[in-house]
Length: 72
Figure 1: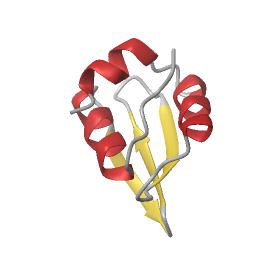
Figure 2: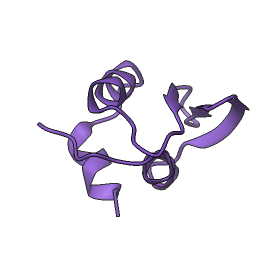
Figure 3: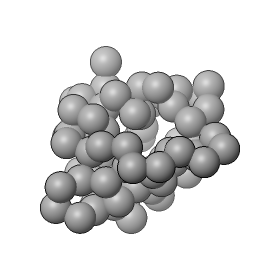
Figure 4: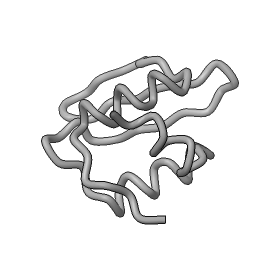
């Protein structure tokens, strides 16, 4: 499944809708955690590289289809 080109703000909002909360921000990277313990780190840039984002979502065990549904 191909991810759309997203900004860091869009990724952040979609992850919040999935239940993730920000736990740390260092430089241009944001670390978020889900109540069940999953964590994700992604760059908060104007354009987040699709390959980087897909890898981060896979590492955090986030379903790509559910993530794309949350993107607005």
